[in-house]
Amino acid sequence: MSFYITILGSSAALPTSTRFPTAHALNLHERFFLIDCGEGTQIQLRKYRVKFGKINHVFISHMHGDHVFGIFGLITTFSLLGRKHDLHIYAHNEFKEVIDFYLEKFARDLTYNIIFHVIPAKKDKKIFENDKLSVLAFPLKHRIPCSGFIFREKKAEKNIKKEAIEKYKLSIAQVQEVKRGRDHVMGNGNIIPNEELTLPDYKKRAYAYCTDTKFRPEIKKYLHEVDILYHEATFAEKDKKLANITYHSTAKQAATIAKEANIGKLLVGHFSSRYKDTSIFEKECREIFPDSYAVNDGDTFEIPRRRVDGTS
Image (cartoon, rainbow, N blue to C red; front, side, top):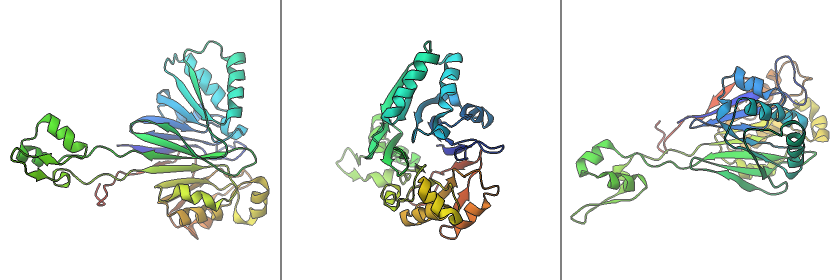
């Protein structure tokens, strides 16, 4: 079952000739989620063949232009394409005023409804949940209210061994009970433990998204052992003072968070346009956390499915 992250934009503040402002697309079991929506996001969605007609949920980290300017065109495009199903937007309360103004002045005749969900600015909260996924928002430290997000896959039903079905002549109802974790009670009263009937569970996968933020070690309590962490690295270490003044992070600071949270893989982005060669970010990260990558627009990262015993 799929769990992919596509980088749609990796630049901070300004678009460049090779990088668009921030936006990520998450594909979980062919359900698509948009995380931030910088200028030109809908162009990137088409370019990298993301099924944007299937995007029903948009998560906005904070109300700075390089993270939201793309959503207005996207809202209109959805309507021009005849969208009928609701679009859910998750953001801080201030952004609802902006969306309401846009709808009043530019989009009175939308073909679908927009449902706005308020993200608390100063505390963590589960803001979305369905049968496959839950999303936690938690506070970062920026010049204005800003939230990070953790997308956690839910535990899947167990896979029953085919030979167990044949051996114990399980009915469809009994198979469903075993898949839900129940032991099987035979007609003579003997109990067959569930672990003998099923394959090992799959590990629940998780993706964490942290931008924009000043270095904030305390967020590692949310990030512990996530499979992939995306953390902003607007500046290289030589510009650490500037990062602190502007409430951003350096590559080394992002890597420090990754190491202390014991995550699987680190992605860094949101690069200042002052840097023409972003390999410096990857180099600085890998001095602390070897499995680090400086992202480019169009990069796709998969979290593979693994069972708790290490098998695929």
